[in-house]
Length: 425
Image (cartoon, rainbow, N blue to C red):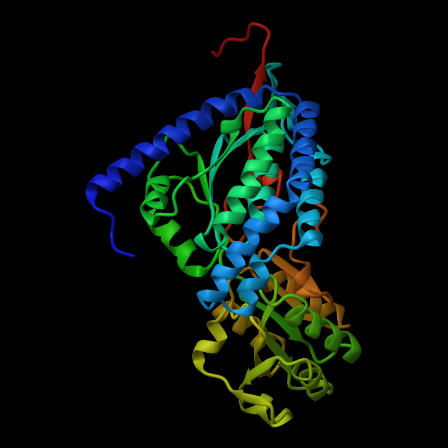
């Protein structure tokens, strides 16, 4: 897309500023609402999603048809597509967030100083969040629900491929929230898909308190490079599964098949399979994956195990396919597996399959990812599976929050100090 001219940049700056000011005013009212009021509003929003099922699915059908015309991959279309069952899942997720414990006001810790000052830390909302995301229309509802439950206002900017779905879901959510007393401006959606408006969001320091990008590598890199406000980054999901020499063959096969093929388009899908050279069941694991139609790309030793394994390029080790394609590498032991993950991973989710406790302990201690698993599919990298309800994304950085970002990750804290006339000498 061509660069917007300076006048358009100015207009978008004003647009975002106006939206942000409205959002901040709404957030102050939202922050004063009780936990019960916020929960009731979210249940009303979930009911409105169900009531508007036909309109939402019709809007989604437009997006899917447009995506097919534009040549979106099968995996991308799967992420985009809604049906009655998936939409009910979206509404149920909003209900689930409403029923989660409210983190706002929670006392994190308390101490009494020798001078009798009582100091407590309590959770508070972050403020106004900007969330920029791609593909999945369910993120519109998830993000709105999590932000409202944690007392935050939010400015949403979804991807062009889901524009009709996002707007229909947003309209339903706001109608439900408003009916229960939440200001409409607590959940806003950017009324334009122009990329210059995203730039205005990223530069809205002092108006937007934190930006959360959820999408592909290029989106996250743009946000990190341009943002003048704090960023909670969700990088690409270049997830690995390492089958150790002491892995149970049946577990290794089932975990690998599920991690790759349950849903190929989600960030927790396995993209590289590392198999220990001393593991006896490697050929069976590869055959089980290839038999289900997955394209395999591997090194020389992997190719020797199954004729369907094509040669892997160096780029394959650094690629998030989000499709039925898998890189396979045979490694000489635990240390080489860990080194490969460190060199090529995105610090999202990495798995070891082993019955050896010592090997598992070393892997889980040394692999520096937000989520590290033993003997489980990486597809469990999801806030709902962690008991957190819906999630904003999987944060792969080190600051503020890491792993599935749900309610707690959307709060900060302040100190409350109680005295009785103390003065400092």
